[in-house]
Length: 330
Image 1 (cartoon, rainbow, N blue to C red):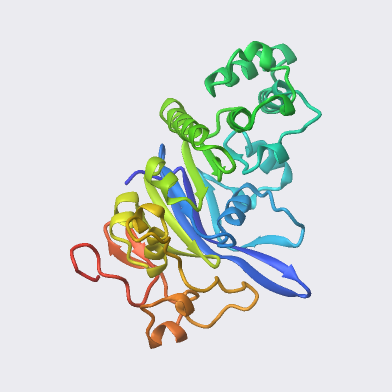
Image 2 (image 1 turned 90 degrees about the vertical axis):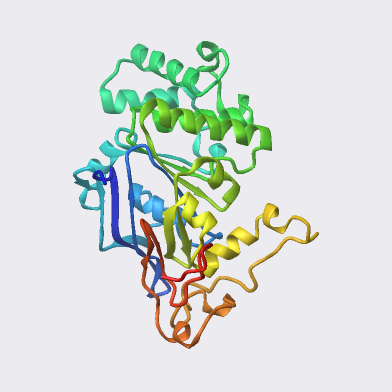
């Protein structure tokens, strides 16, 4: 296999809370290949957004920090960069589309100015050159009449158009890796489909690698090549989309799949995973999912399972992995 464009190894995120340390992301590892779309999946609080903010060094609080591990973007370890070095990487090598564009687009700046900012910062473009590039990006992301809309303020755009503008800001200087945090949240289904098609088109045109943060396995099925499932701060399953969706080996992954409306069709009721995820400052011993798992055994209560191979490029952290569709257990 070719060298990954992004390689995350043993990265942890620690919070200082009331004089004690709480691990929010625990020794996360995964690879991202050129042109690959990885779906990072899990319930709210699983650590998926926090992990990606750590990659970008955009922690929402000074009480949060990354401990250990490495994040290699080609030959550069992002975790070793100082603030100035990381600013030079954001937008130019790695970008992020945030969940709520209204909170991340400056309401007092014109859309075009916010897109042009990256060109002026990273490429030294003149104001006129940066404006022309901003218009071109608005055209690429499907904003109608971009030459006039470039001077609009965010409140003059619809929700779907604001999301497109946010994508244009993230694309600014042609990053290799783009992180999309719930990019279709709060959009109607028609606009959701348009945004997902846009991201696929941009991947194909620019050779982007994407990390898609989502709790929606329908989005994953439509867009992603591979899936990484997180639970209570840890990775519990990782593999190709086909393997994970058709042959889930971790009971939590299977539970997420069974909760989808299509899986519950005919029963009249939506299935749920019983119980609640554990508090990260009061984690149980052993497997973090064992209290909610119908397949747990004695070993699950005592020993934390580590990731192990379930097939070619498919791994899961489970003492008693589910049988795959062929009825075999690795």
